[in-house]
Length: 155
Ligand SMILES: [Zn+2]
Image 1 (cartoon, rainbow, N blue to C red):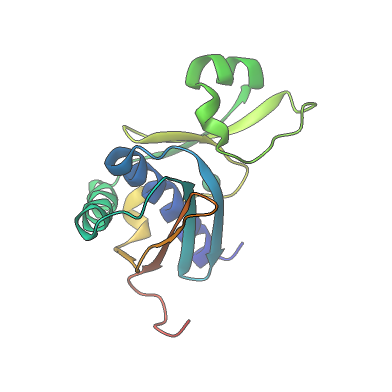
Image 2 (image 1 turned 90 degrees about the horizontal axis):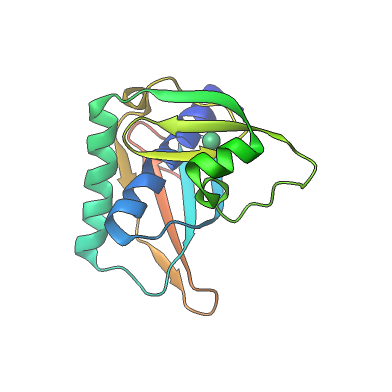
């Protein structure tokens, strides 16, 4: 992953926590990162209001400004499941044979099982701008696109 992709991927984790806090949507269906652009798709049952979307954006940016540590560590799978619950997986399958997991924890925010690279602090993500969300009713999925503030405007 490029440095910019690492930033954008770290922003996905921050945004995920904001979506959990504001909407209570805790299951991520997929994520996408390309340069300074990203997308988080979560399971949800309706289109969010404009107010909710701006609260998500504000919560994510507050977390960036806080400069929270992004901790990465390995754990035995069983221990991780007992300690954090199944929410660490989202909807991504982890093969049964895998017994140790890489865990990513943003302090006072959220915890996920994730093998990708991350920044050490949320402050290095910089400001995050949410685009217009898309709700797919048939799939009960909410897509939240975002740009990092210094990303190229064309997409
Ligand atoms: Zn990650």
